[in-house]
Structure formats: C-alpha cells, structure tokens
Length: 320
Image (cartoon, rainbow, N blue to C red; front, side, top):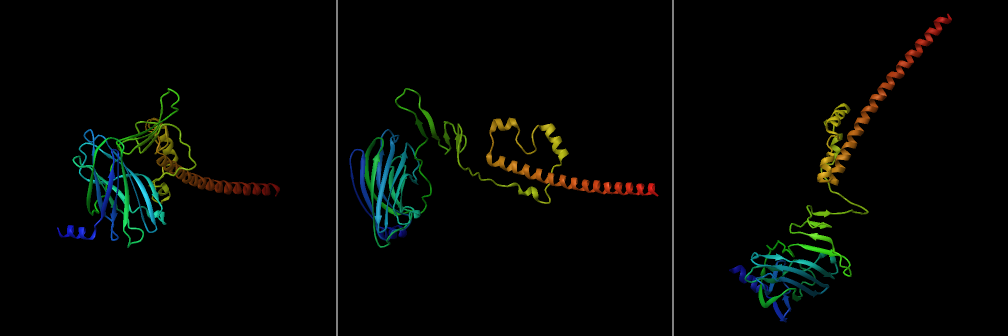
C-alpha cells in the first residue's frame, strides 16, 4: 500500500480526449520526473460480436526538447483473451531523435481482458530534456466495429511487461492483375507459429520458398566447423575403408543418401560443413599418399643408382 501511494504521489499524469463513431483522439501527459516502466492507462474499448471485431490501429506522437517521434501500432482483441498486459506490434516508426539509434521513449500496451480490453502508454526509455514533461498525442481507429470508447485515467509503474501481443492469427499477401479474372498468386504467407512462406500456404520452416532464390550473398550460420579433422587424435578413414563403404552404401561416408536428400532437402550449412570435412579428409589422404610416393621415388632413385653402379663395375671388369 505504501509503495502504491508513493507511485501516485510521484507520477501524476494528465488525460484528455475526444471521440466519434470510429475514432478516438486524445492525449496523456507524463510529468518531468517519469521513469522507465511508468505508464498511463487511457482507454477501454468494446469490440462488437463477442470481441471478434477487436482490430484497432493506434498512432502516437510526442515532442520533448530535441526529441520528436511517432509510431503506429496494430492490436488484435478476440473473445476470452487472457487478462495480461502485452506490448503491441509496431507497423510504423517515425523517429526524429537526434540519435535515432536510441529508439522510442514510449510503447503501446494492450490488455485483452474480455470484460474490459484497454490500452496504455508505457515508458521504455528516457530521452530528451529531463526537466520537461511530455504530452503524448493519441489517435485510435477501430478498423472493424466498436461499440463504445471508455476513457480511463489509471497510472503506475510496471517493469514486468515483457510479452508481445499477436497482431494477427495469420497473414496472406495475394498478388495479380485485378483487370483479369485469373486467380491471384500467393506471394507471402505468415502462420501462427511464426513460419513464413513465399509461394506456399504451409511453410514448414521459419522461411519456406516454393521457387527459385537469387541473391548476391547468403550467409549461413553453422557450428562444429570441421577443422577438428586436423587434430592429431582424429581417426581418418583409410582409402580401402572408404572404398568398402562406397561399395555397400553407394555414397560417401557422412554424406546423405540420394533418397534422403530428395525427400528432406539439403541443409546448406550442414552440407557445406560435410563438404569441407570431406575436402579436409581428402587433403590429408593426398598428403599421406604424396609422402608414400616420395618415399617410393627415393627407393627407386636409390635402386637406380645401385643398378648404375653395378653396370659401371661390369663395364670396368670387361675392359680389364
């Protein structure tokens, strides 16, 4: 209780608003001494059709000394959502702070409680002149049907808001020429688990592409890069062992079979790792083979010298 009273005494903001059937316009004011985590809860909404129409666009803007910034958020509220505060997804960012990399002062939170879904502005960074208050101008647009706007003026501090509010259950982009009656083409599809498909409605990975990819550069992160092949304790398969493996399995050791590659595809990072491992092993085998050849050449050269010496001795004996 004492902590709550202290927050109220130190952090006292202002709320003003206006509205019509589809929009709510207002502002909240944060005092000069605001801190990260301070919030102003300013509006409750009533989406129609048991919450199914809960789709809102919220834009904010503010100035403070050398700070001038704005942003737009999209929120999705449906029936029986959890009673928790989550940060809304930002779809536009107009940051004009003199050090733009520092980011925004505020973010938008949404509580999707079915009985009383509502919005608040929360401080995520303190920038600009510390002795100046900030008025945050707010515009809320009901993209679908909204039954009522209810002004709220609650404030406090919350450092526990770490989760993000889903903006949609899924998202599709269909492209084509609307002049013709042809079907549109599915360009991009995002599904609930965060997977994104290009040209496919059922992406099985974080990015699934049904088609060709062309790029100037692709970087693939990988682990366990196979320089361990050059360690002294590495067990290198001999050429006869490799030959026997190939006869039985019809592919190189460590490499996927043709059937597996055709069924599951190829992991570029893993394949590059396997190819390098194979190249390093082959290099070691070539080095060993070269050493053997050098030794054989030395033996042959020595034998040739002995033969030459014997030949010279024979010639000498014949001449005598």
